[in-house]
Image (cartoon, rainbow, N blue to C red; front, side, top):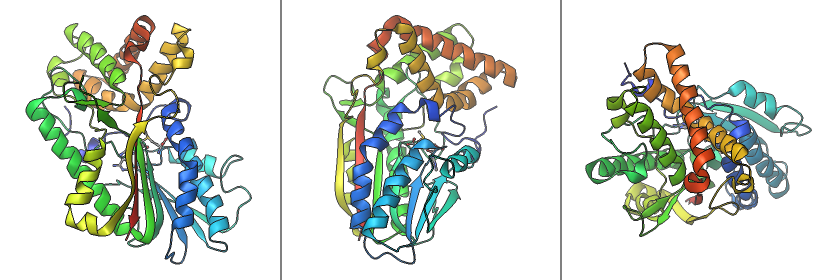
Amino acid sequence: MQSDNPEDQKSTEGMVDYNRNSAAQQQIIDSQAMQIRGLVEKVSNIGTEFRIVDYGCGPGISTINVMRPAIEACRSAHPGEKIAACHADQPGNDWNTLFGLVSGPSGYLNGTENVRTEAAIGSFYKQMAAENSVSLGTCFAASHWFSRALHLYAPNTVWFADLEGEARAEMAAFARQDWLTFLRCRALELHPGGYLLVSTLGSVPDAQEKNGFAASGRGIYRALQVVAREMADEGLINGEILDNFVFSLWFMSEDEARDPLKQDPELSKAFEIDTLKVEPAPLHQADLFADSIGDPVEYARLYTGYVRAFADSTLRKQLFEPSTNSAEDADRLADEFFHRLDGLYRKFLDKYAFEIWHLTVVLRRR
Ligand SMILES: C[S@@+](CC[C@H](N)C(=O)[O-])C[C@H]1O[C@@H](n2cnc3c(N)ncnc32)[C@H](O)[C@@H]1O
């Protein structure tokens, strides 16, 4: 049986082989290094230390690539300032790998002084740092995940952007409330003059789509739906469970991201909007793995690896385990699912390509 306790159903714990399969996430961070440096330079009213918190930091490389430019910029813009580098994520994050990297040869602790590194463990939908203690908050490729798994009747799709009617309205309201909660928590933690940078996948207007928006990853999620439906039709996955399953995430449009910042009195008072935009990814916007399309086996391998890294834990907890009686059977279902996904990509190639639009939100704490 699936638990209804949200603590048992975090939307993303246990990402699989994340460091090797996070090309899109790393592309976002690489494209934001200049932005991070610029924001560090603009921070004012620093307290006893310049504290950077990377929310939803994940298990390694990306969060190091966030901290490094921030620390370098802080050294030159605020010389002599003590720095605290805080990595914030859920209990199930691979903390050992992360702190091995932080202090390893390519980590940012190497040869630096006055940098205190720390972890904050919990949910970014709750307060994760002391009030007024954060100079720069960052959150990459994480804020689209909901605070808990949402179950609603969605018989024809596993993802938000293809929902219609009441189901879509329910999910949109949930997403809005989570975004509001996320921002309220950050408003408490940032000190006046501090900045928040949120960067993740977004949606753009598209009249061809039934809901009027093209959301990042539409190809991927439609491929997942094809495989899940096929396995349910063959009796391998419980059809009723599939009918009530959707990935608990939402890629916001510009208006959806801006709306609570304008409408909510607490937030409009707390934050000044510096940047808020959704734009095509700078590289490989139409197909993340376009460079490999000439080699269908490699192309399919890359897509399957990428998708499994972020989707395996969700599918396992919410679809495979509730459809079976044992962990071994759930493992077999997971292997079968990703084997079929690999076959789908080999056969249909870029029909299910990953299109990418980046949402960037930069806020200054008043
Ligand atoms: C796709 S990974 C992104 C990791 C890293 N920021 C990057 O850009 O590569 C999403 C991360 O967000 C974390 N996450 C998701 N929901 C969270 C929550 N409510 N609170 C804290 N972290 C969360 C997951 O545990 C995961 O490490």
